[in-house]
Length: 268
DNA sequence: CGGGGCTCCTGTGCGC
DNA sequence: TGCGCACAGGAGCCCC
Image 1 (cartoon, rainbow, N blue to C red):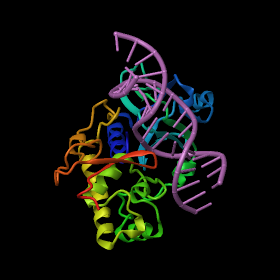
Image 2: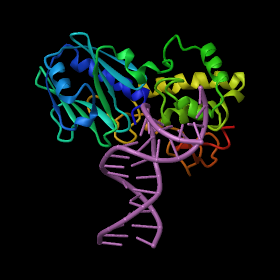
Image 3: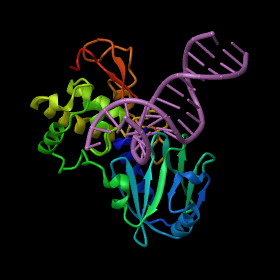
């Protein structure tokens, strides 16, 4: 599952490979991936355009291309963006001016690609909360935001309008590191807990980026390489195993329909 | 406005 | 051994 660290890793990989190249052609093998405009118009509008720069906002990748357009990509659960040779399973395949390919692969077909004039006006991007690794995201903001809400803290961390880029893996990991039970109501956290959670969110995201992401499910980077952070995960997928801190058995519950692992001893 | 449940999709892994 | 079903999950959407 690509979350902020995985999308950031893909972004950095693509920056080394495709900046300055032109998009010669597009093969749309599964048209439902293209959300706007209509696949035929999408193809016509993007052909011959130059890739100028790449940015990330939350879990979105945004490619700035010539003629003031933006290619907005969300990988959802199983999306991949792989630079290299043409791949059989690719759902949408961009043919580049250097003869290489940019493959959009996506086993479960939840991924989305759009071509827009103004990426900030894409509805779901427009509603995103702050970037957790930005300087503007500071403890004062976070503290205020948390106190205003009254939902279970794990659901809040995964709410993209509250904070952008955190998904099921890093929400669980940040809460474990901060020693906070995922079902705690956000407004019940004391100052120390809020401080600790704030610190651990940044820390786990930065560490995961340093290790090039976690290869849960199908995640690979822009070169098709797996990440190295899975072995550093302390609760995700570890139900029934013993806690690394206290040897208690890791428990798994459901929150908002999503699996949630935590240590009943360390997280209170 | 908020929270719960459903939906999209397909490979995996379980029980019978 | 093989079939069928539940399950996994990001985020939009509907409903109460």
